[in-house]
Length: 134
Image (cartoon, rainbow, N blue to C red; front, side, top):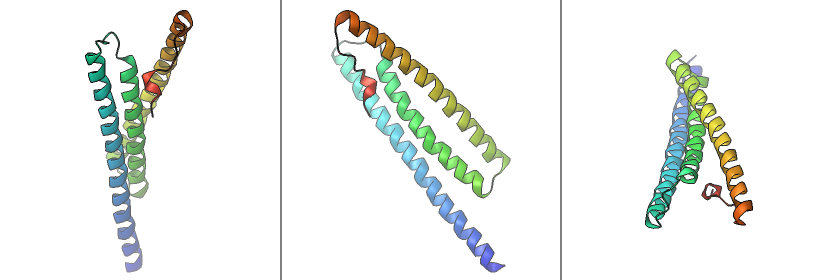
């Protein structure tokens, strides 16, 4: 019986380490996205192009969505080992937020591309939104 206890304790330790790594990766991608957004905002203000921040916001939203994927993976891992109702609720909330964010982000990106394509046809411009980065 002691062998099972040691195995369970070891699995719990490994799970905590993996969860920490997944959460750190998520935080890293939030920081990367925030950095890109900040740089793009500063450039927009320097160039006096403050009419619309849609492409900057969409780019940042993509990084937030990616970070939520890592957070969701971390939450799934925690509920797989020893789920509590609080952890299950947190997992459900994260999944709903991620799904809603991805849905609206995808829809908004499609609308933005269509709008840019329409303007590109009228003006003969290239249609490469800033959000195409990454």
